[in-house]
Length: 349
Image 1 (cartoon, rainbow, N blue to C red):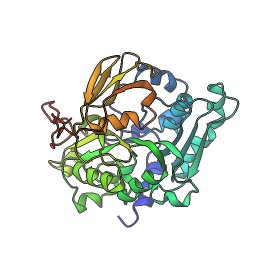
Image 2 (image 1 turned 90 degrees about the horizontal axis):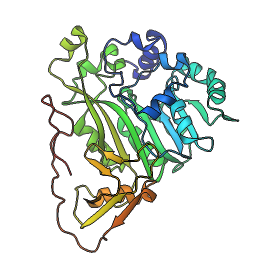
Image 3 (image 1 turned 90 degrees about the vertical axis):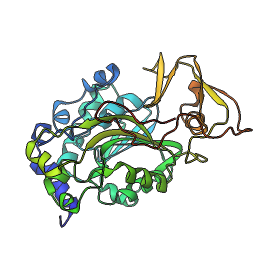
């Protein structure tokens, strides 16, 4: 493709008019949202919903009062969900480069402000390219949370997007995003196919390349939250892609000093208080850390810091110190982090 950005704007601004126009299921959310998110979705305008193109659920817990940036906000669906969850005193900013999508999002700001019972909008949208965030007058270390839903795969310079995200996050902030990944590197021939790129397939990162990029950007210990295989459901596209396997994955990346590149054991433990709204009985940090209310659980040093050095700290009791190192935390593995065809999940801490 001569100009990836122009092809993407054309695909999402002109070729696609509603989500049903997609030719595969790669840009389709595959997980069932929690009841409180369903309630938030019920308040969103039909036109905004009809122009949604996402592959996951980029909505973490504990959002009250946060300042959030949505990279590739499209028609604004996720921004308007977040608007309800951060409350009147929070702020949500969406960035998108497609005029047609921005027009829909901006046209419905007043509708949602009234629908949510707010006296002023806590959402705004900025036209911009997520590969040029430095041009958008966004202050470094000014966001508590940055999300993205099936958009970073559309970027050409993904490493820069991750590095800029790290720069914009406050210490202890996180990037929580859903995207498409592959089990191998995509050939240049497939990358040059505008339809496959627009369908979020040929821009997908090989998962190991993503992990390297994330760590280079400063996100030392990427954590997978949800993952689902993508079946494509289009015979012509399946034939083009051959044996490549694709996955829709939600990751959380923390901006925390002192995280190690392996899960180390310091004899630490935590107990969840059950105080996060909509997570009363238990809390999921990622796809291999479920914390039942009041149960004391041993954790590696990285997990301890992800709870202690972030907005989650007030909801946990912490036990232990950093005085003694006991070696590697048992249960860690280096295999592929996504579900395999037989349903098994690779080992991890």
